[in-house]
Image (tube, rainbow, N blue to C red; front, side, top):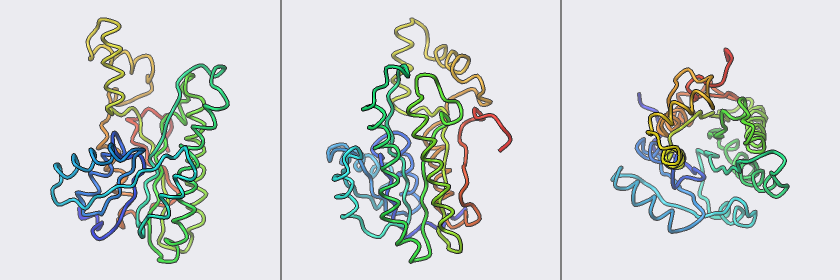
Length: 264
């Protein structure tokens, strides 16, 4: 399928590794000019080199920004060209007991996970509305519905992201601008793979056994019963970024292996 994405420009936040990098790489393969984002120039340069090796004709460059710092975000916004596709992917989490999650933990997660998308969308949505074209895509999490006991604060921020996406979509009525959310499930990113390997070593069992335990104990609702890969999320984002998704607005697209219960 031709996703009709050539001659568009995308900003993907938090895109030097993991899901963000996979999104950036897939969009680049579809002919999108992609702006990578990370907290350091070194990380961005490494990601660009890696992406250009994978996709030699990629049009890719980067802007560093720390989304925990409002002035850094303002600087990023001031250096952006016209953006056709905004992927609000950047996110952080603190895992721990609710009673030991500090105010600062809450504030920092909210600043990065929620305000990043709020600030960028506030800056870019008006231009999209004027041009009568554009896509804003938020990356949420299955944790919004599952709410693990050690991720209550993180889950709360991702719930806020989903509410924001729906609200922004409602502002686009009568235009060709679309705002949607993708909800990844358990995705085997570099971080997740490292965690599983460490856990397997600590428990003296195989990686396969640790994976089985995870889905039996932590994600028993998963129909897939195995990890997805970052490219699974990238494919969903590319669809929503494309004109072929013209009838999809204010929606949530789950890429969760069926872990979120329900019929919609």
